[in-house]
Length: 239
Image 1: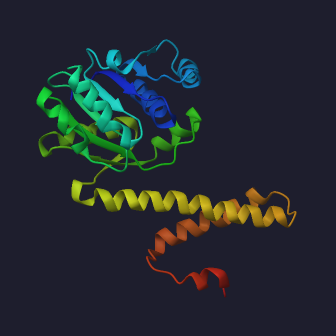
Image 2: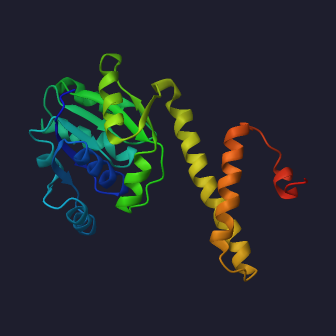
Image 3: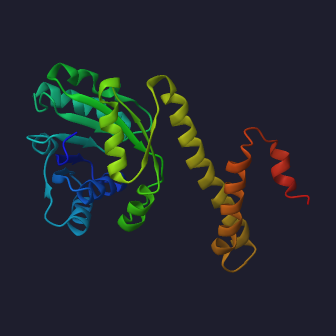
């Protein structure tokens, strides 16, 4: 991979904005960000002043790398449209950030000679640029691509500040499920715990929970308990 790429990012949501900032910080040329949301365009102007906001079909022109930071279900239809308009070019690197799919979402564009890749940072983006940038620099990033170009997407993950982990096509479904379970279940449990404390009129409920949540998570990851009886959770710590 060239030491300096011309890059376009499709999508200016929390993931797109954080990745665009990381790409810029890594020394690449951020040529454009595509979004139709005025509020997100305003946020781009704040975090990355001077960066062009452009329609997708214009953003992908004359760039070396296109990053699709949009929901996974939107990628295939968008790529199909870009193929029909012949907007992508031979040798262009294309990568998406969805946990749900591998690089097969770009199959329709292979006839144009693009180089397909997948790259998902395993973090929860907040939309707050400084927080997301810090989390990205301390993340693991699931990557996949054809074998010949796997070092390219691994290098890109490193440049974003994360550590690449190869997640091949056959493991993608379980990977996506694990990410979904970890994210949604954590939010549910934390929300329930906060509600219980607030209903009891206990001050600083979120601060109280922060210590137990961190230590419980760290211990669960350390001890690698993969099966647990829900009754044990209700009984609490017996020691």
